[in-house]
Each structure stands twice: as structure tokens, then as C-alpha cells.
Length: 296
Image (cartoon, rainbow, N blue to C red):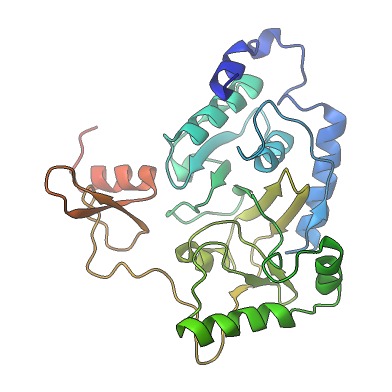
């Protein structure tokens, strides 16, 4: 059965036999306690009892459990997938949360109090009081240098990150640059190396000293971690090989004309030429309206 079919078979909230937001209250309290611990220790991975959800693993069960545990009747929800409000993942997760909570939803980043995301941070500045919840496939930043879970736990406890620095150094020796694209490792609060989920490097600077609360949930790996507001987040770099974001110099969004957003590359079927559009579809639509390029 598909996710969409599962959603359609759920009863309406007013006739539902399940708790508000689907998860039972005891489970929500446990997830909230672990979330508070994650907020208290920025960047630290807190184990939690990941529940079975009516979606397949890989669809963002960790982020979904965080959202359902924290959302309230008065919240405004936004769900995005790689910047888009209209992808299959975003639409079906939004429908599911709507069905089990009856909360209001929006595509406007500024109006949302809870935002669940996969692989992007919205282009608009997130403000105090907003919560951005990431769907995380692989929470362990040391997995590429150490396969043992026990050993990575020890390395974090002792702040032994020498192998990660060596991994980056070897990358520079081979390619004369650090080639990591998404999942670029960052140091949180000067203590823990953290995996920021598969967001592009473009989004990394917006984690630093942000006003919003960033929460990360990995359902399959059963881990929660967090970046509280006004926390330092520094990408790993060397003095002679600095961190840099994707270069979109001389590239412009064909829809809104933006020159300072993260762009997706497409190919025009008619001409075969490369064209670019904003990854954040809601931001692109709003910018186009402000410039008079769209009606409504």
C-alpha cells in the first residue's frame, strides 16, 4: 500500500480513535524529554525509542516523529522536500499531519511556526520561535571514517576527531580541495562534530548563530540532535583551504530573476540549454510576485 493510500484510509480527526498527532501521549513525552536533552547538549546525538510510523523508513520517520511530538493545535505547519512544497514526499507528509492534527498549513516560511524539511533550509531568514525539523538519513558524521558504532561513540566522548581531519586532508591531497557536497561536517558549540543532514553547503552558514531552533531526527538510526538558537556552527576547514559554498556566479533564476539563492539546474526541452530555478519554490513564487512577474 502506498503512503497516499494509507493516508486516505485514516479516519477524520473528529472521529479518530488515536491520540492527537497520532503518537500516543507516553511516546510523545519520551521524545520530548530526549529532545530537551539534545537542546541542552548542542550537536550531541541522543538515543530515543523510534516508533513505527505509517510511512516507510526512508520517508523521514525521525523528522515526522519529532514534528508529531512537538506540534500543537495552534501551530502553523510547512513541509518541504529539497526546497519544494509540491514534491511527493512533502505533499503526502503534509496531508498525513493535517489528517491527524487538523492544524493549519502554509507554504509561506514567515507564517510557519513548525517547518519539516528534507535536504534544504528555506531561503527566507528563520526567526525566533520557529522550529525547523530535519529528516535525517545518516546522523553519524564519523561513519565515513569509522564503521563501528561503539568506536564512534568513544570518539565523540573523547573529542577524538583526528580521523575526520585526516579524511579531509587526504581529500585535499587527491583533489586539491575538499570535495564533500552535502552532509558537510560542522563543529557545534566548539565541542561536537555534527552531520547537518544532506543539505547543500549553501545552507551551512545559516545554521551559525541562527534565531530558530534546529532539530534533527533519524528514525532508522534512533537518534535526535539539535542546534539551539544563537549557537556557533563552524564548518571544518583548514587555514589554507577554506570552506566555500556552491558558486552560482552569472546564473539567474529564470522565474524570479534571483541571483543570490540556491539554484537547481534544468535543461530546456525546446532549446537543450541549461536553465536555473530557485530550489525554494515558495521563496521563488513570492519574489516573482513582488517583482510583478506573477499575478495574484
